[in-house]
Image (tube, rainbow, N blue to C red):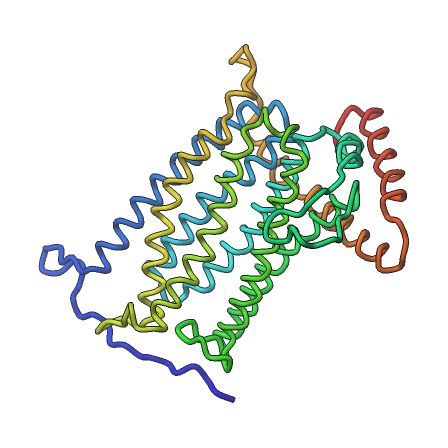
Amino acid sequence: MPRCPHVSKPADPTQFWADGQLHFRARDVGWIVSGVLALIACTASFWLIIKHLRYYTCPQQQRHIVRMLFMVPVYALVSFLSYYFYPQAIVFQLVRDCYEAVVITSFVWLLLQYVGDSPAEQNEVFSQVKLKKWVWPLGWWRYRPTGLHFLWIMKICILQYAIVRPVCTIAAVGLQYMGLYCLASWSPAFGHLWIALAITISVTVALYALLQLYMPIQKELKPYSPILKFLAVKAAIFIIFWQSLFLSILFYFDVLKETEYFSAEDVQVGIEALLLTAEMCVFAFLHIKAFTYLVYRPADRQRTTKIGAALLDVMDFRDWWRGMRDSSRYIVARSRGRDFTEVDDIRRQKYVHLHKALGRER
């Protein structure tokens, strides 16, 4: 079985601090710039997160918003650590990719909350959906699910990415450990090609389904500036994946090359990390506009919520797992020829009545 060739590069003998003086190498400039950008991005994001937690007046929506806002600090910090500790970059990227699953799932739940406060209200809206035509390039496809089946299919197509992405990253870490991943190679003998192909298909399906889900409910979403929110989430996911893929192709065709002290793989990790910290700065300020806290701030600004309690609610992922569970039940029911939506409606009605009786969401 072929193994990825290990390129051992000598360490740069130049010390950052020696003889009472600073000696700047290109890598030192890079990690300083990356660190400053990450600090700016984290500061802006944490400011917005704290504002949402302080005025946590609509938990059904804000828990998903805050989860998405944590994307910037997680990505910025992971990118900086990947740059500084580049030999362990793939391990740090595992954290980033796992949180990417949280981001895309939270965005779907947020859109559904905008449509209706309760699952019953959401089902009422989607039960009226009649898909006339798929978004390009699938306009020719004659299969057009309607009503709640459309909603479930779109959910599954989006949520599959929340599973495929971290699984592929875990596989990449394992293959890297065995010398079978080879980031700098596109040979079918190594895992990089196949994992990149799996993620490409998965992210394409997820982003397409997200757009298709938006089309029939754009009227209901109009008061919430959906285009800006789509840009703030879809662009981040799109850029992260395709940017990495593009850099790999550039190195494969020797457009970008290794250096005296760094292999091609190390250089790719460094460039990608530096770009991501810069991009997270942009997204941090974009989020301030797209996910403003002002609409949740009460007229009496003195009436605030406890930040710790609000944060605990955000970190309670039972709703996330509940959605995954229901999607799995739908797949099983449909595979057995049953109409899952009828059973689901009964279950959800019980949930709504319990919510009203107890005066709490869960």
